[in-house]
Image (cartoon, rainbow, N blue to C red; front, top):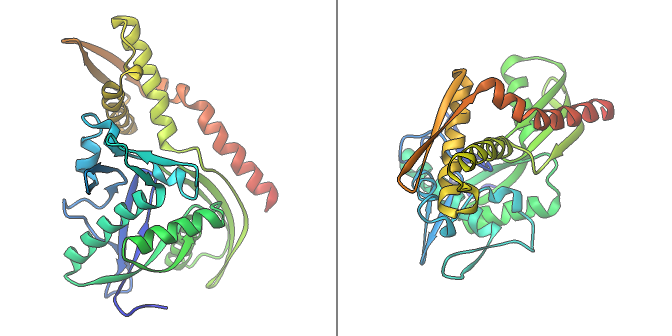
Length: 297
């Protein structure tokens, strides 16, 4: 039941998160964060009793890797996992996610000029009860009254169905930053029925970044004798540059990454064709899930 405040919808993502509200015209609007960005990196830096969330935390990953935690969504509901800070503090996944959700709540209140109390949070379709419960707990720790959690593909299909008026069977292919799922649904009017679900909680853009990182590291190691993946600071820098290169290759056929080691610069050439070859196996894993979902449906 709503507690009477403003209600928001939250996409709590592995790599980026967003918060939205239904506007006066009945359409959803993404609320920009305090930096004016429509999405907030799901990255948290813990320093003493203070947590920094978002772009500034992500930028600090290369300088303070032991205090920065990313991709925590993959750990939700895992009671055997904790993040250990440089000071030895143990922090559970729900607490990390709560810091992200609290930041989204604060940003929404700043933008709206009003108190935000209630939220609906999206989760991957294959999240089990433990992971869904952990997500709700994180929301409550952040100060939300969590009205419910909704499957991400269902949310996408509902928006598509209501927006287009389309009826029939749809397949939702949801490849996020750290998780993948595919859902086959039947839409009839305002009735949305899930026919089948498949997914992989360890497959997402993060894995595409990893392939680029390994390739760049091999090239740099061959030239310099130094493996960037064996140094925490270099690895954090490499991850940031690999993600940027991946984005550039979306719109251009070629780019270059420069790594500076021991006062020398090493340049690695990357092509879109080469990137596709590196990640062909990852794409095949999504295809397998699609075929299973279709067979089940």
